[in-house]
Amino acid sequence: MFTFRIGQGFDVHPFSEDSDRPLIIGGEILPGPGLDGHSDADLLAHAITDALLGAAGLDDIGQRFPDTDPSFSNANSLELLKNVVESLEEEGWEICNVDCNVIIEAPKLSEYKNSIQDRISKILNAPVTVKGRRSEGLGFIGKGEGAACLVVALISKS
Image 1 (tube, one colour):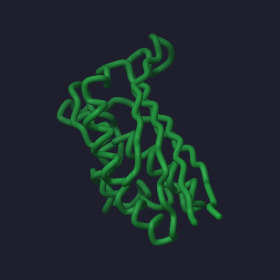
Image 2 (cartoon, rainbow, N blue to C red):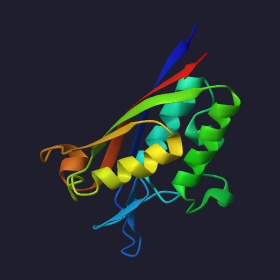
Image 3 (cartoon, one colour):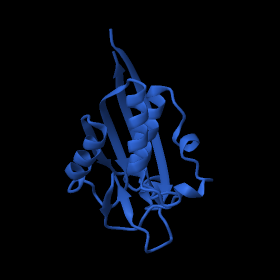
Image 4 (cartoon, rainbow, N blue to C red):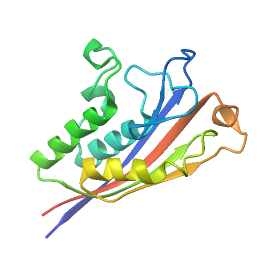
Protein backbone atom coordinates (compact mmCIF):
# COMPACT_ATOMS: atom_id res chain seq x y z
CA MET A 1 0.00 0.00 0.00
CA PHE A 2 1.21 3.51 -0.83
CA THR A 3 1.16 6.47 1.51
CA PHE A 4 0.61 9.84 -0.14
CA ARG A 5 1.32 13.21 1.46
CA ILE A 6 0.67 16.74 0.20
CA GLY A 7 2.71 19.79 1.15
CA GLN A 8 2.16 23.48 0.50
CA GLY A 9 4.96 25.97 0.10
CA PHE A 10 4.92 29.76 0.08
CA ASP A 11 7.60 32.38 -0.26
CA VAL A 12 7.62 36.13 -0.74
CA HIS A 13 10.46 38.62 -1.21
CA PRO A 14 10.67 42.35 -1.84
CA PHE A 15 12.79 43.59 -4.70
CA SER A 16 16.32 44.53 -3.66
CA GLU A 17 17.67 48.05 -3.72
CA ASP A 18 21.03 46.54 -4.78
CA SER A 19 21.12 47.07 -8.56
CA ASP A 20 23.82 44.37 -8.90
CA ARG A 21 21.65 41.64 -7.38
CA PRO A 22 20.31 39.26 -10.07
CA LEU A 23 16.69 38.12 -10.30
CA ILE A 24 16.80 34.34 -9.93
CA ILE A 25 13.68 32.19 -10.30
CA GLY A 26 14.05 28.43 -10.48
CA GLY A 27 17.79 28.81 -11.01
CA GLU A 28 17.21 30.98 -14.09
CA ILE A 29 18.66 34.50 -14.17
CA LEU A 30 15.91 36.77 -15.49
CA PRO A 31 15.94 40.41 -16.54
CA GLY A 32 14.93 42.92 -13.91
CA PRO A 33 15.80 43.82 -10.35
CA GLY A 34 16.76 41.00 -8.02
CA LEU A 35 14.83 39.94 -4.96
CA ASP A 36 16.14 40.75 -1.50
CA GLY A 37 17.01 37.84 0.76
CA HIS A 38 19.67 36.13 2.85
CA SER A 39 20.38 33.50 0.18
CA ASP A 40 20.03 34.09 -3.56
CA ALA A 41 16.31 34.81 -2.89
CA ASP A 42 15.09 32.22 -5.42
CA LEU A 43 11.50 32.25 -4.21
CA LEU A 44 10.48 29.33 -6.45
CA ALA A 45 13.20 27.07 -5.05
CA HIS A 46 12.31 28.21 -1.52
CA ALA A 47 8.59 27.48 -1.91
CA ILE A 48 9.27 24.06 -3.46
CA THR A 49 11.71 23.26 -0.64
CA ASP A 50 9.13 24.22 1.98
CA ALA A 51 6.35 22.23 0.26
CA LEU A 52 8.52 19.10 0.19
CA LEU A 53 9.62 19.51 3.80
CA GLY A 54 6.00 19.99 4.88
CA ALA A 55 4.76 16.98 2.93
CA ALA A 56 7.40 14.78 4.57
CA GLY A 57 6.71 16.20 8.04
CA LEU A 58 10.24 17.58 8.36
CA ASP A 59 11.45 21.02 9.48
CA ASP A 60 10.47 24.07 7.48
CA ILE A 61 13.00 25.92 5.34
CA GLY A 62 13.70 28.53 8.04
CA GLN A 63 14.56 25.86 10.60
CA ARG A 64 16.66 23.84 8.20
CA PHE A 65 18.52 26.76 6.59
CA PRO A 66 18.19 29.68 9.06
CA ASP A 67 18.81 33.21 7.80
CA THR A 68 20.80 33.79 10.98
CA ASP A 69 23.44 31.32 9.78
CA PRO A 70 26.16 33.13 7.79
CA SER A 71 26.98 29.94 5.87
CA PHE A 72 23.69 30.38 3.96
CA SER A 73 24.43 33.98 2.97
CA ASN A 74 23.95 34.21 -0.83
CA ALA A 75 23.52 30.42 -0.92
CA ASN A 76 22.41 28.80 -4.16
CA SER A 77 18.82 27.81 -3.38
CA LEU A 78 18.92 24.92 -5.85
CA GLU A 79 21.69 23.38 -3.72
CA LEU A 80 19.44 23.73 -0.66
CA LEU A 81 16.64 22.06 -2.62
CA LYS A 82 18.96 19.20 -3.60
CA ASN A 83 19.80 18.71 0.08
CA VAL A 84 16.10 18.38 0.91
CA VAL A 85 15.47 15.96 -1.99
CA GLU A 86 18.29 13.76 -0.62
CA SER A 87 16.68 13.87 2.85
CA LEU A 88 13.32 12.79 1.44
CA GLU A 89 14.94 9.94 -0.48
CA GLU A 90 16.74 8.80 2.70
CA GLU A 91 13.33 8.70 4.43
CA GLY A 92 11.93 6.57 1.57
CA TRP A 93 9.81 9.30 -0.04
CA GLU A 94 9.38 9.68 -3.79
CA ILE A 95 8.29 13.00 -5.28
CA CYS A 96 5.20 12.48 -7.48
CA ASN A 97 4.78 16.01 -8.85
CA VAL A 98 5.08 19.70 -7.98
CA ASP A 99 2.75 22.49 -9.16
CA CYS A 100 3.93 26.11 -8.82
CA ASN A 101 2.46 29.60 -9.20
CA VAL A 102 4.98 32.46 -9.37
CA ILE A 103 3.23 35.80 -8.84
CA ILE A 104 5.27 38.63 -10.34
CA GLU A 105 4.35 41.61 -12.50
CA ALA A 106 7.49 41.54 -14.62
CA PRO A 107 9.18 39.86 -16.30
CA LYS A 108 6.61 37.50 -17.78
CA LEU A 109 7.76 33.93 -17.22
CA SER A 110 6.38 32.43 -20.43
CA GLU A 111 9.68 32.44 -22.32
CA TYR A 112 11.61 30.99 -19.34
CA LYS A 113 9.01 28.50 -18.12
CA ASN A 114 10.21 25.41 -20.01
CA SER A 115 13.83 25.91 -18.99
CA ILE A 116 12.84 26.40 -15.35
CA GLN A 117 10.56 23.35 -15.37
CA ASP A 118 13.25 21.17 -16.94
CA ARG A 119 15.90 22.29 -14.44
CA ILE A 120 13.70 21.68 -11.39
CA SER A 121 12.32 18.39 -12.78
CA LYS A 122 15.86 17.03 -13.09
CA ILE A 123 16.60 17.91 -9.47
CA LEU A 124 13.34 16.37 -8.21
CA ASN A 125 13.23 13.50 -10.71
CA ALA A 126 9.52 14.33 -11.02
CA PRO A 127 7.16 16.41 -13.18
CA VAL A 128 7.10 20.12 -12.37
CA THR A 129 4.60 22.69 -13.62
CA VAL A 130 5.46 26.40 -13.32
CA LYS A 131 2.84 29.03 -14.03
CA GLY A 132 3.43 32.76 -14.13
CA ARG A 133 0.73 34.93 -12.59
CA ARG A 134 0.25 38.66 -12.29
CA SER A 135 -1.40 40.62 -9.53
CA GLU A 136 -3.06 42.95 -12.06
CA GLY A 137 -1.72 46.06 -10.34
CA LEU A 138 -3.08 45.11 -6.91
CA GLY A 139 -1.09 45.07 -3.67
CA PHE A 140 2.67 45.16 -3.24
CA ILE A 141 3.20 42.70 -6.11
CA GLY A 142 1.01 44.71 -8.46
CA LYS A 143 2.92 47.85 -7.53
CA GLY A 144 6.18 46.13 -8.49
CA GLU A 145 7.55 46.00 -4.94
CA GLY A 146 8.12 42.25 -4.77
CA ALA A 147 7.05 38.78 -5.82
CA ALA A 148 5.55 35.65 -4.28
CA CYS A 149 5.27 31.96 -5.02
CA LEU A 150 2.78 29.24 -4.06
CA VAL A 151 3.60 25.54 -4.47
CA VAL A 152 1.81 22.23 -3.94
CA ALA A 153 3.86 19.03 -3.82
CA LEU A 154 2.72 15.41 -3.77
CA ILE A 155 5.04 12.71 -2.40
CA SER A 156 4.56 8.99 -1.88
CA LYS A 157 6.10 6.09 0.02
CA SER A 158 5.47 2.39 -0.52
